[in-house]
Image 1 (cartoon, rainbow, N blue to C red):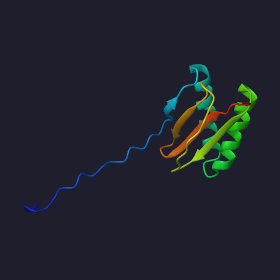
Image 2: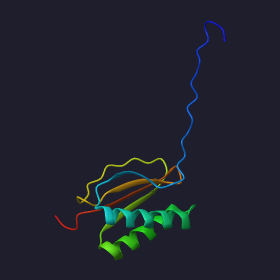
Image 3: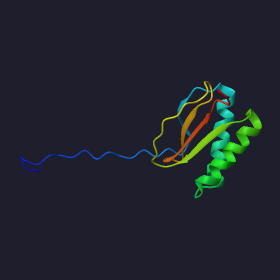
Length: 107
């Protein structure tokens, strides 16, 4: 290394092999069931996020009542309005993000 050279730090990428919940305000029992449903759907449809999102939405609507909204994908941003105690944001398999929330049925 010469005097004018700048040493660059190499940042190691961290890939999680387990479901990583980044944020949730759901009750604990509901949260665990939603995480299991999300993991199952993403593992069943690893290349088709639309089918995974549909499977998650249908299961949650049956189990907890509608209207749930689901986004499954990589590298997206969003701003939402949601019903309290119904938001979950998680990562599965490293870079697949799942956002689940319940919208308010009526205003």
